[in-house]
Length: 356
Image (tube, rainbow, N blue to C red; front, side, top):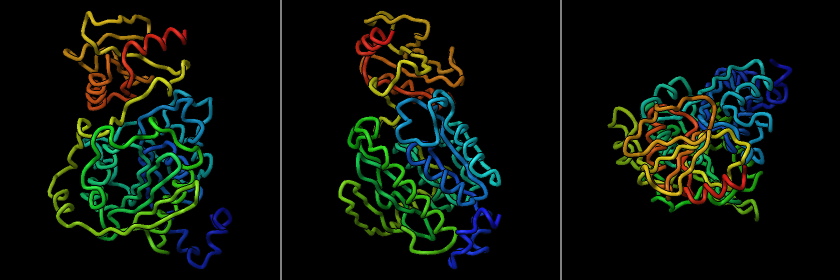
């Protein structure tokens, strides 16, 4: 152990006792995408004794420019499981647990409970608010990171009675109010920069060194390297409102940005996809094919002809509204790799024709 972590142990602020703290620590990373990949790699090589990974998604070609744990050979495989294998190769002395499931109101407390620190590596508000509320109920710190094109944010919530995410952002944004990476794109190196800052905050919390970004949020612009830190207070009323619940309150996807939507320009023809048409019978254009299932929303049962087989389940309708509802129902029933197509059936028909 000493040889692997010699450079850590040589630091007076770490030493053998600090390295032992890292070895004893249990950290859960929710999201194994752009942020999660660098977070997980550096926590693993730093000697965090137990790492947990939560991610229901599979690797796609469009992930590869920024999600550095994966290769082209991993396309179609579960991110959490691929990440687990890669991290064990990096450091066989640690324990890595993979959860190939979506984090939900019903399972979040059980998944988060064994861990000391929770790291938010997600890209959607529904899960982020869920993580925050679960951390408040379990009294665990939440290390936060967010991305927008060339800019990133980092903070630590619920640390030693510090403010929570809801103290800074009490309510989720309205639908389409804030774009995500699928809509706007992101500079490939940005998740690496922000993810490393998040990993640094985790190490600082465990080691008890430096100034943790509790009650402060760091904004970084990679085009100018301008950065600023904004301070914000703890809101007792908001925190008491969350803590009075037995379990986290679900943030409605009807009131929030479409977090599970995909656009055709982010989908590769080689992706392993099952297309699910949730339109009613008689709607045009009619689409047929081996990988197209007809499941009208009016009689929708997510278990019908669908199973967790590693394929991407992409629901579509005429405009993306009904398909989003079907996606939410499928996720709630436990189906993995579910997405709503932003475009409608007309655009999908053209895309399928072009990619035959």
